[in-house]
Image 1 (cartoon, rainbow, N blue to C red):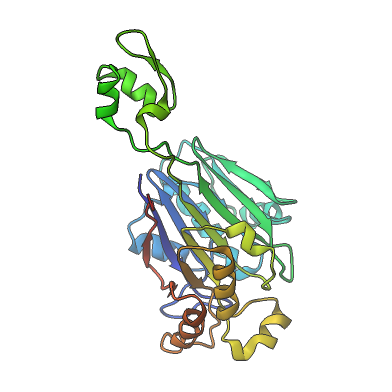
Image 2: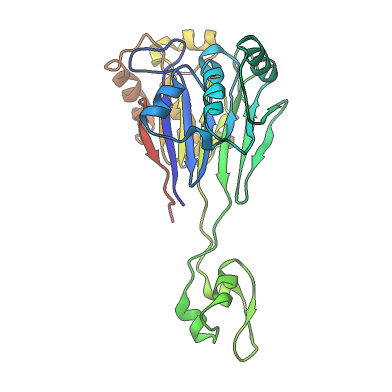
Length: 308
């Protein structure tokens, strides 16, 4: 099953000609999940030829303008295509007020169901058949949440030669074994899944953190992430400015990545003070601590593969 992250916007505060405001879309086979919806989100969706009507849920970190100003346009855009399934929107207190006010003032024509659920504390917010999305509190100038999408673990690799040796005929019984169910061989003897499967394999984990001070409790939440998308708004020289504005530096994001044992860190939400060329300083500082760091760029596609 494919899992991919699309960087729709990597900037913070104000859009730049080649840098839209923060937004990341996660595609998991047929499901699309959007994390924040800054200005310019629709542009990247179109340029990447992504099917926005397939977005199942939108997760908003907080209600600062550079994280939500793309929502009204996206909601109206979705009315231009046939949509049968409801759109779920999760976010901190007042996200419902923002959406309702936008609909009323802009006289939006919405022909599908929008379900808005405000978050008042950490925990699971969305569940699929074999994965879940949970949130955790960040420390910013207003209520703000980070998000984690984590898949269930997978059964071990199936060994058909073992099943045949134990007398289990090819067919539905093999499928039942692969799904964790015991069966009986041709001679009536019991065969357990562990008799024909290798060691259990892990699922995948995606984490999204912006905007926040750096603090120790982030690391356990994002621990083991295959892809950790985290703001790196400033270089270390501006750490006092970062603290004052309740943001973090690229180095601080890298320290969290080290403590959390993530596989890969993608910096995002850059200050507009940095040109695309200047961003190399943020990357240099982060890679000094965590070499598996990359700079998110608008319309970058990041596959998230199984490790086993």
